[in-house]
Length: 494
Image: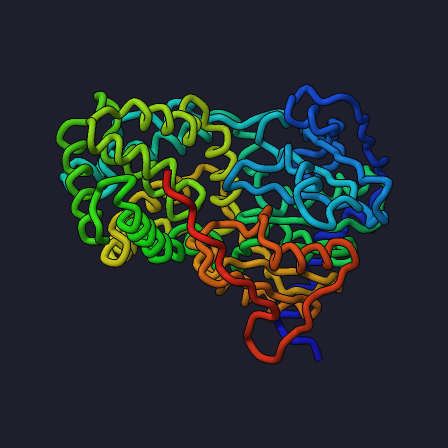
């Protein structure tokens, strides 16, 4: 007798494959040609477009245009089929992800496909709500002044309203289920029955949903830094990250202290904390260059809990600012990292995460949770709260999340950095329990969000075996990693 969960999953799979089973509509085709994107062109990739339905429930209605890239397999390698890189909404990654085939061991045997997911340029239309939303000198994230919360509530409401006005037809069709349906259209247009999937960060949820809705279409799947499908998105994108990111921020302080000969900011974590607190107070009173206030300084320095590779650059820029008061480098970096002047990535991200699953409608719930989180994560919690807060008033209705139950027969390799602040190990472990043909590789002590690409020979040995032959590490009993690698060395100061 089927469990209730299995019945629900079977219904979801039936709905997901219903159009394919009864479809009589001709499959669209992809015409491949030269890439105007210079990075793709230099790598020898081809580019093309595919027309997909705005609403997959109405396949003959309005169409969207997806931008695609393809990097063909090397003739010298045994052919493994098609590998679609699932779009990562957090990073805006997808269009150039076909280039992963050149960066991963065992990747040469696949035809790699990159997709600029719906709403993200160069796919058409590209969603934009307020290009100036990530402006300079914004209010402090933390409610340190009575007006801060009101100012942010107004900003958030204004942004959500602008998104509703920018492209009202597109907004209800930006869910992960829509992206998964697009991926299946790409698979069909490529003329293959099965595809492998490579997914990272928030893109792992796209892979999880695709494998649930199209379980027979997946050959192999790599989920690097997996999102826990039980926590989307109010928890996974907000509350679940705060304490872990704060921990990593303090590990960055430890690294600065250990490299005091280079940065001259102090020799202990407490000393670095005092410098950081003092600088926040200073830019709150008088924004640096009239532009870098507490929100901008927080955004810049709290990139360090995500990516260790940023530590030397951000450590150097912060130290230079502390010692000279010159914020020019910080201003330049903020403009680049946060894509000031364009909100396409942010708008498309929210359009997906705000409609995948409901968020609390009552602001008091958001405030109470942020206050509680800030007791453990004072540098992270409020910024994360406001980043996601447009979901509370998002103008498109949220759906119920897909119950990801791991019914696909595909093999799955899970890759996890132990101290990942964005996607903690609990997500990968939850999926390991779901997928019976899976194995989990954990890199102990590693901080960076995303295991691959990497120069680590331990990781590459496991990944190369899987991509080239489908061989997984032997599965261990119980809730444990099936393979383990040592932490990479800390970055060199400079």
